[in-house]
Amino acid sequence: MHEMSLAEGVLQVIEDSAKINGFSRVKTVWLEIGELAGVEVEAMCFCFDAMVKGTLADGARLEVVATEGQGHCLTCGEIVHIRLRYDPCPLCGGHPVEPFGGLEMKVKELEVE
Amino acid sequence: MCTVCGCGEGETKIEGEAQAHTYVHAHAHEHASLLQGRPHAHAGRMVQVEQDILAKNNQYASANRSHFAEHGLFALNLVSSPGSGKTALLTRTIARLKGKTRIAVIEGDQQTSLDADRIRATGVSAVQINTGKGCHLDAQMVGHAVAKLALADDSLLLIENVGNLVCPAAFDLGEAHKVAILSVTEGEDKPLKYPDMFAAAEVMLLNKVDLLPYLNFNVPLCIEYARRINPYIRVILTSAVSDEGMAEWQEWLETGLKQAAARKANEMDALKRRVAELEAELKSVRGER
Image (cartoon, rainbow over all chains, first blue to last red; front, side):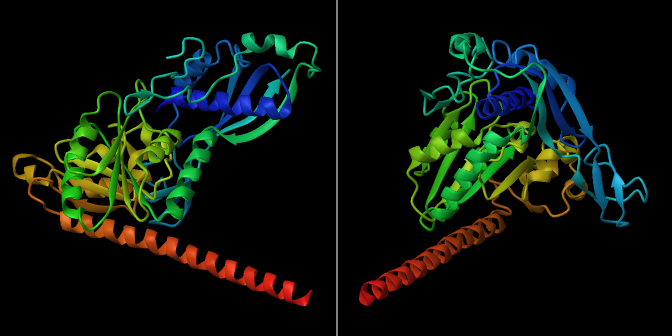
C-alpha cells in the first residue's frame, strides 16, 4: 500500500532523530515490518531510494526485519502463526483469527555518521 | 511533486488554495555549510530509534482527536472505493439530520470541488481538500480543514476520504470511527481483497441495495467475508434512493453524537468542580493570612 507515503514517514523519523542525536549522514536504516502490516517491501525500498535523494539519508541502505504474523483463533482459542490477515486458523481451519503480532511498521535503528 | 525529495510540495489544496510544503525535508546539500566545523560523530555510530513510521501523522491525529473531544464533535472517516455512492449517501443523510443536528463535511478528492459543491447545495458547510497526486487524506490536512470550518460544538463532522480502499486504512485522522462503504455493484469479495480497510472500520454500510434485484450479489456471503476480517463490524444495508436502512444509520449517528456531547459535558463538569475546589482553597489561604 502507499509505500511512497511510508517512505516519507521513514525520512521524517530519521530527520527528527538527526535533530535530537546530532548526526548528518545515515548509512543504514533498520526497519521492523510485520508480516500483516500490508507493506510491500520491494516497493518500499524503491520509494525510499527516490525519496531520500539529496537528503541526509541519500544512498542509505534499507534493512528490513520482518516480524511474524500472530493471531488468536476465536474458534479453537489457540495462538497461531498467520501470513495474511484473513488466513484461516492453520490448526482448526476456523475463522476469524484475530491478529495481534506482526502489525508493526517501525524504524528500529540507524547507522549514522 | 518536489523533484529533489519527492514530497508533494504544493499539491495539496484546501478550497483551491495551495498548502505550504507539508513537511520540509532538510536537504543535505543546502545545509552542508551549516555543518562545517561542528563536531560530528564517528562513522558507524548506532542510534536506537524505535519509532512508528506513521508517528508524525499519529501526532497530528491525536491533536485532532483532543480537539474533537473538547468540542463534543462526533467525527467520522468515510472510506470506500470510488463510485460506492458516498456523496449521495451523505446528501441523503444530511437531508434527514438537518434541523436536528449541526453538520459539517470535509471532502477529499484528488481534483475538483464537485463533491463539496454537492454538499453545499444541501445547505451545510463543506471544505474541499484536493490531494493532488496523494491517494489519501492525512491528519494534518484535516486539522487545517477543521480550522477553516469553524465548527459549532456538538456537531457531526463527516470526513469523506479519497475514494480508495487501500491507503486511507493506515492514516488515522483523529476520527471516532472509520465507516467503510461498499456498494453491491462491486462484488462481495471486497472485504477479503482489501482486508485492512474492513479491519479498521467500525461499521460497514452495504450501499445501493435497491439494485439487488438486478445483480448476482450474495449479501450473507459478503457479510461473512467482512466478519472474517473483523468479527465486530456492524453492517447496515443502505440505499440513498429507496431510503432502506437510512433510519438505522441515522440512529447509529445520533447515538454517537449524544455520546460525544455527553463526554464533553462530563469533562466540563469535572473541570468546573476542579476550578471551584481551587477557588475555595485560594480563599481559605487568603483568609488565613
